[in-house]
Length: 157
Image 1 (cartoon, rainbow, N blue to C red):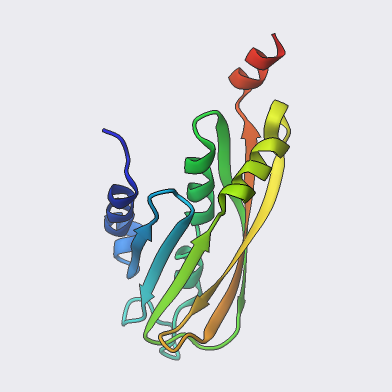
Image 2: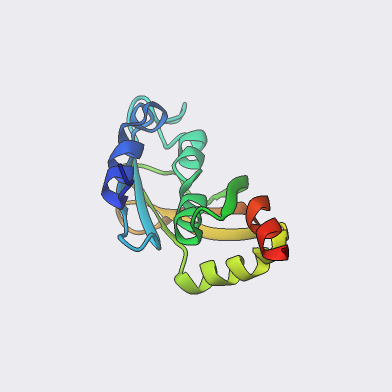
């Protein structure tokens, strides 16, 4: 069974770490260039002062840049999420949203950099916003990309 954007969004929303943390994947675009993820701040996802727990906000941003890039690059590349940074700007309340975007041009640039087995570490950025559109946090995620060894060896022959 081929994974479709819709199936992946549903699966990621039902995956226990996301489901119980109040994280929902609202969308993966059909061309794998965009994902929209929400976090509902509630009794389980809030901190001591009743605002969004920073760990929940970090978790809601964890795999999406690497997943978008992985689907655009295809099976010939190893793609991993390696680092994350989050700057908390204001307390998060209500439903928080993060939009992740990896353009086809950016994916092509990464593909070219990784050609021949080169190790690529690329940073991607997004923001987490509240229901009013105010920025709650700024997020950076580093993604590792390398062409798979079997592909590099085959092209050297």
